[in-house]
Length: 140
Image 1 (cartoon, rainbow, N blue to C red):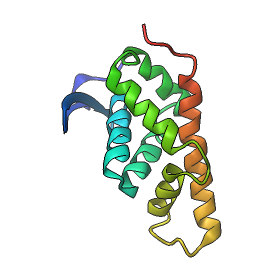
Image 2 (image 1 turned 60 degrees about the horizontal axis):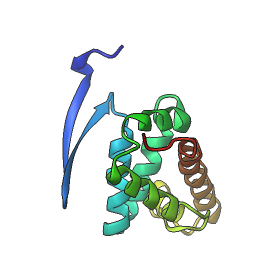
Image 3 (image 1 turned 90 degrees about the horizontal axis):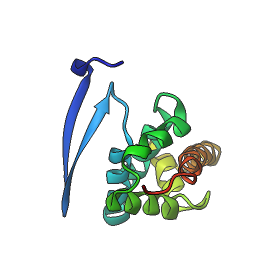
Image 4 (image 1 turned 135 degrees about the horizontal axis):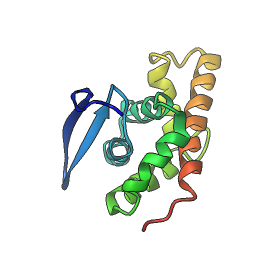
């Protein structure tokens, strides 16, 4: 059990809604991932794709453990919207999500093709690991 002193409550204001997300010892949760995904769909910034990848990659227990965190929020329409954006942006290895995440992870060095491809594949696999984990969940 994590002491309440280790939890930091963050409030994110995002256009038409406010969600409260918990940052757990520096790691992200499902609601934060969804906020970033919706932002990625609307704002179109490379760093949003990287933040999504980074949070999923660094979640304790990996993408499958993060998928279990979604159980409490899976029925929320905004969560469904966020998941939909993730599926769209990370659907292909050469899709916007993996490419943008790789650009940020590589420090903007898109000249080094091998480094870019490695980051791109990693981002694709990590985010799709979460999405595969969500496939079995249905809204209550």
